[in-house]
Length: 434
Image (cartoon, rainbow, N blue to C red; front, side, top):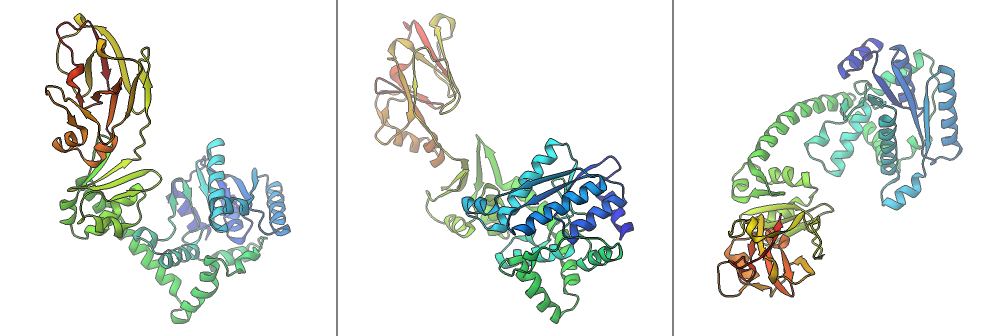
């Protein structure tokens, strides 16, 4: 086991000067990993979490860790967590709360004390259990390869070893470790799989864990090909423009496994109800989807994804030169003779200063708004202007107007009102620059 462990460390990029933070519970798995790191003369420290879930047993685990670190001269970090309170506050399970708490803390320690890797004692049997949990709950292909040997500077040097190998090593080396009584509590999904489902599967195939392990390896290789193909498809189908992401619906539906491709695209933005999104592709425009970070809408031939659109009104006093809300805008006052007389562009608008009454107001457009588009003589509803200029539904949601004395001066970034344009006798110019 030591020889194979040494080979794995080299594969993981662990060298003599590598600094490792070892997550140590005190159970047999982590104690064996602790002992192997010592054998390899690794530079490591211990991080122990007391989740305060098993009363005196949790405190005794903590004392055991302190004793182990002192006896071996290894630096130790210990943190106590109110796991039940965290779980209730965040409406998650105890196991999920413990996971979140420990990895947040581990990440903080790793960054603060400049450790290269966090090492955990996950082994082959843990990976099998994870795959079965994912299958039961429903998963994509990434949930079928189990626990990776390394990911995001987290290494799992024991992931190739079976539990029986770890127990055998602990017995041969007469290692002391702590038994976690909660491992026998079948209220937890993982324990139920470990203590009931896997033994039942072994009645059908005594080598079931080995068989599943081989399948996991094959799936991992298949996933590499899958990820490569998906990446190429995304580059073709997902177009980023003006801080929006657009998917051409006809092109998507022309692809083999269009629904799976759609899942891979929209799940990156946190959308999970793939059936509803896919069904919307053949519906009329306007179907909307929301999550904490993104807004998505089916618009004509496109699926458009944008960060949440939240536009606040903003008062512009005469001395204001710059605002960040609703987007970055500069306001400049200049004399007419310092600029060339020309029409406004979408990015820079030149306005006759004398026609403005301060304070100005920036606000989202609303139904019933009217203005006289530059170059025209009659009023036009903004809603009609948007239709004529083929505004997408998201462009309409983002549209803002600059107001002076209840009159629309311009649609920001789009079109000036003809009443506020520069004329030959204009003296001062108010420049709005996006």
